[in-house]
Length: 237
Image 1 (cartoon, rainbow, N blue to C red):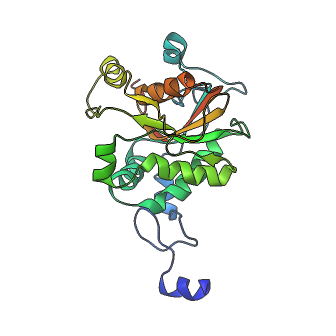
Image 2 (tube, rainbow, N blue to C red; image 1 turned 180 degrees about the vertical axis):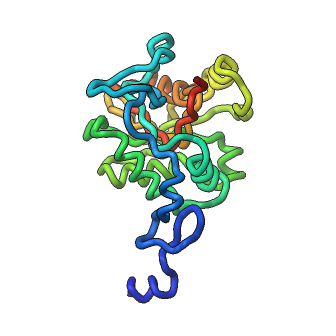
């Protein structure tokens, strides 16, 4: 049956629609032009760093301000095909991107996730969730949880007020906008107290949203938070 379906509906590249060897893949040219992160990156915010090191390194920004999570990773840079994939998942109803994206994210986690961690997606406000009809972070979370054998808890966190778009805002404005906006959902039946958390989102820019969500997990008693995102906005150099 699967072979017959492949003849009728051959696998297509996620980006350009060209023929590929297997489902949920990228063709050669699209793979080449997709900015996968590799090499040395900040161990907290996943920003690319110059040079090489066998040890975990932290960028100057994270040293100066700190992060409320223990480790952070990203699969792609948010530019070119990386940006296209995020926007297709986020606004284009391309749920099929979540599965391969989770594979890329799992590779970058490099075994840094405790075996008992709960997978928690960054929440959308109810109004935005209803308009979009799905939470792209939850799609990534359920796929990543399946790959890692971890429990996905989509309702662990609640965005209790609608926040404006962060596009174009500076770092301080981003953090101010998100302050107190995300809390542990009291209706959640899986307590975070004493548990390790793998926090999942689609994009990291300043880290304001992830900081708000991480703090909400910590305030609910989470032992440790690890962050995984599909794409990282490159810092200005």
